[in-house]
Image 1: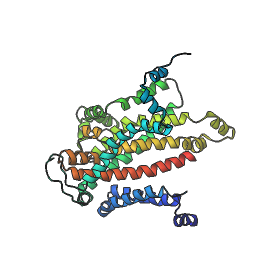
Image 2: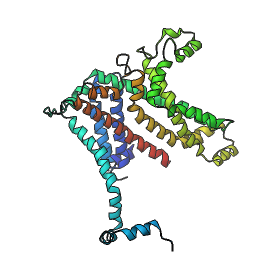
Image 3: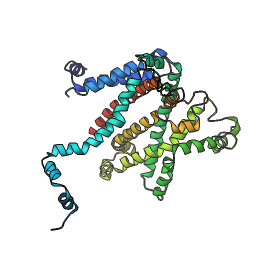
Length: 62
Length: 315
């Protein structure tokens, strides 16, 4: 956990890609879930944030 | 010394062109070769993508080419994400996607496992199993509508034979509860062979010496499966899921032929919904925003997936 947080602080690719992946995953689940309409409404914003974040952080050093 | 085709072409090249070509670096020649491809990609892929993003912020309608196009900002996105019908369509797609992937992976892997045993006639069985994949989705959709007919359909007769139910008592493509399963069954029937072939390639790439070493160590068949077979087939399996996931996310032809999105909008997948908005209601700007949402979703998912795939391959 400490290594993960340290990686985030030092802008390392691995931990930031993990964060971006979780954000994208959450966005996709929000888009397709059948329970909460508000989650569907916000899903695209979350997915887009995650995807842009992923593209940016994949250029961070290992 | 033999006179090759290259020598003949070199001799026929006019001197002023030959002088120019001789002066080019390897890098310049490489650029000359790849420039047509890059231009084609820009024209066919990148330009339409940028154009679609721009249209998604306008009220453009393709059936009114002369009308003034107005900038509407995020209005199209707000309408899509505030529309319960779009939400319903996303849920239908999720149901279709999850079940087809689960069934195709499970059945495809099991079939590959059986075929890999190389029993007598296994090649013939491979050919027979692969047949559905070679058919056109439009044809498959059409003939499954006959198979699903309550009165004369073979599917209903088989279900009736197995369960004792009345064959005319249920309609796979006319019932709101059964129609989503009807499209899952047909897609699974058609595309399981594809997953099977990829899994078979994975299974046949495992060197027998690994199993022999495991036998020497007295590892059980169960242990061999979990520690040798599955980890070594996993990259192939993930690749199959990626291909099928992307394909099924944009599934259109099969479902249109089979149910047309009905009954009601129970099987109206996002691609069908999108086509209706774009080419029946002619709301091009709205449909472009819809396409951008789907594109970002698939792009995001594919990014995660490719990363996971690379990690599995590196292991």
